[in-house]
Amino acid sequence: MPSAVFPNLSKLTNRSYSHQYFVDGSPTAVDAFVSGAWKTILVGGLRAGGRGVYALDVTQPVTSSTAESSVADRVLWEFNHTDTDGADLGFTFGEINIVRMKNGSWAAVFGNGYNSTNGRAVLYIVDLADGSVIRKINTLAGNTTQPNWLAAPAPVDINGDSIVDYIYAGDLLGNMWKFDVSSPNALSWGVAYAGVPLFQARNATNQLQPITERPQIGMHPMGLPTQEGVMVYFGTGKYIETTDNSPTGQNTQTFYGIWDKNQSTLTPFTRAHLLKQQIIDESTVHGYNVRVTTDNKIAWHGTSGNPADSPPTTHLGWYMDLLNTEGGNANNGGERQVSNPILRNGRIIFPTLVPTAIVNACDFGGSGWLMELDAVSGARMAFSPFDLNNDGKFDNNDYADVNGDGVGDTQVSGKQSDVGIIPTPGIVAGVDPVEYQYTPGSTGEIESTRANAGNKDLGRQTWRQLR
Image (tube, rainbow, N blue to C red):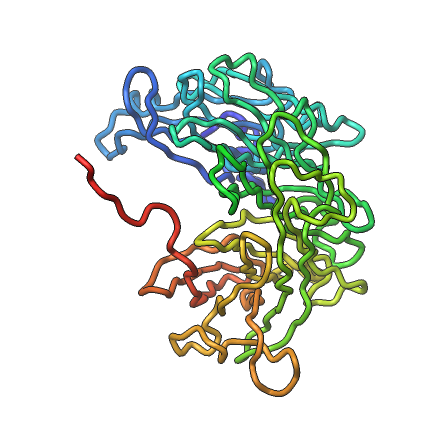
């Protein structure tokens, strides 16, 4: 049990006990080469349970005959907010990554989390063997007056050597940061683009949009990451503070796909330089509430393009605003995107969260939508993503009737949850082209969606031996 939760143990015996968080974070377990040997290392955070991170050696399973002394030795380290360099550590809500760094070490990489002492957005890179801080990268964004935090980061290897080159992460002030860790010298690791964020998320009325999820990073359609950079996918919104569960009084949130061209300098750009996609219709198909979105075409420019052109003749990515109907409509008031998206077979898949007013403690808090868009442009897919009539086919019988003639005519892009608030779906492959997407909901039920697996012709499909 991590030491950060010890002070709360006595509360379990309190007759007037109310819910208390303890070890609430999902762990990450990876095989890594530490202390001269390959081991399976588990690292986890505490989420709302405390401001700390821990690491365990789980190479050998524990049985009833395992000596207690040997079990204790499997605790590798703890890193808490009271430690040296720990003042910037908050409640570790985000996923922790285990990766190999350019300086040869294996490391745990994580954002500093929510409600830190200093209120800044900070990236931690901690030695996996002993928990010592290899590098703490402070973005300098945020303070005690305007608190900030860094969400779960996404490490990226762009040249295929299984070593991290860059790390992307968003913060509560809408900044999407890029960290350059491509040098063998850890002292040179820092915020890319001279300390300026890659992008700052603001809605149409210029309000900052918080980023509380881990971004997804994918290839740009124009070429390899080493040549054309990468696409960074993320949504905005938060569901942490007590006021976040209200369907009214919320700012409009957005899902983005932006292009990091991975050049030495950055010309700042805004949503004005992105292609706009929209949610244009909501209706019912075979008993399911569904959405239709636009299929506007995107125009990518080469490295000589000027992102400062306004209006843009070419694009640096795309965006889609989520719905935020005034008056707290139960279907779409205060919609936001707070769970990790999935990049899969040319699609970007993400759930949204739509809160409803809580009347009593047993209410399940709201609903959400399971969205599937074309990852390249954010447009609706060229095929039906869901088998809505459960006939084993993906055809126009699964389309929405947009023109009102009683016949399905347009592919849908979203399907509303029937089980309350949903997280990122778990996906299981079926018989081609079917896959099954499972979403546990806040009602206590699990919904299964038969989905179209999309274009699987990605990456190497075959090879030829020359010698």
